[in-house]
Length: 205
Image (cartoon, rainbow, N blue to C red):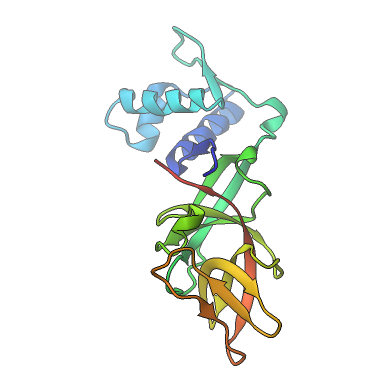
């Protein structure tokens, strides 16, 4: 649905390791040192991660040098975002909150229409007609307000779900985008809050 550049938690950790070694020692680590630090079976595994960081534009590698890694940080990569994954959200029947920080992703700022505050992992298939699938990471801008028709993360009686919001004269409805699911009508006696609005998604192939 949206294109992006992502770093997995492991590659983000390797990039941080490279930055720290340059800051502490004045020189980058070798492939052997990266392999030892991360428990890789061989330098070829480290080389694959370095190649991925090079292709993503974070580093460059000088040929025929044992310590040939160089950081590329124009304007401290102002085009990139570091966003936490806070937990999961139901695209189906609402599920309980899961708010621990699970991962941190480094993403291209252009991935999102608006910059999100956090990511949530989708569980379920009730939003497939909006292009949101099980396992996707959805970017959420924290907000207690939303317009009619927006995709929102809502909390209903302590449980969280992602749906389209429908505002009526005296009630809210949370609409799935899959005909297999019925709308959720918010009753007056239920605790209900909008927690954020959808900004885009990350889908890892």
